[in-house]
Length: 103
Image 1 (cartoon, helix red, strand yellow):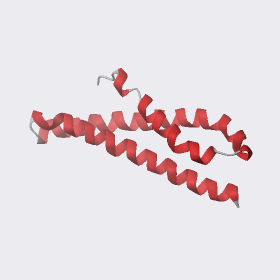
Image 2 (cartoon, helix red, strand yellow):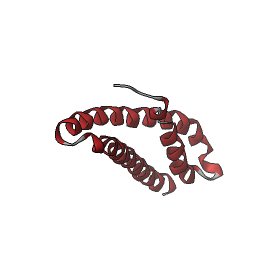
Image 3 (cartoon, rainbow, N blue to C red):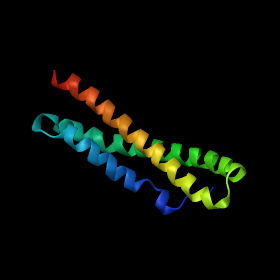
């Protein structure tokens, strides 16, 4: 397994911060900013770990089932599925949390 700087998850961290900002807006929620940064880094590490693991397994599958032409597409699709799922999960979690905090 080769993990390059492009696999660092920095782009996902930026997207994750973009998803979280609307939920952290407002003066009454400033206390959550201190929790948001470490939580975002932890979610990024978890999502990137899942991507590396699923990327490895999908790569093994692709080498046995597909021609070499399709291997990069399988790698890309794996990343899209893992990171999009993580973003949607975080958005859903923040939506539920937002309802509890606001009521």
